[in-house]
Length: 129
Figure 1 (tube, rainbow, N blue to C red):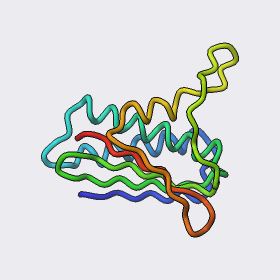
Figure 2: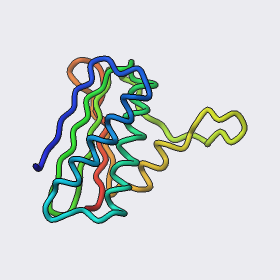
Figure 3: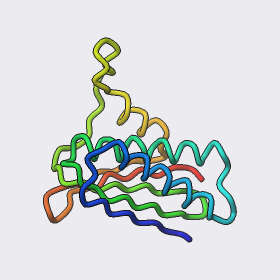
């Protein structure tokens, strides 16, 4: 299994994020050669952050795609919002976030955001395998 696609047409709950994490772990567990535990945890964390943002800020609908390459794993999350993710100062006082996009960028070899023909966007993160 070199690719995985999940389309979640209505994913407005925390269950969507749990489902995405479980799907990512299953995908990673089936890869040969196996992905190390630290790399797998990083991929799952990035999946969790990107799907959380898609559900919270992207209209509740998302598509998750994972692709394995010899030296990397690509995580792509598509949502309906045209608004780009942005780094912001983390809110330590009121707990409104600000950690996710910064963390995704810090953990990734590269990130990219591209518009979709429907008016949304796809956020991609390339992670070391």
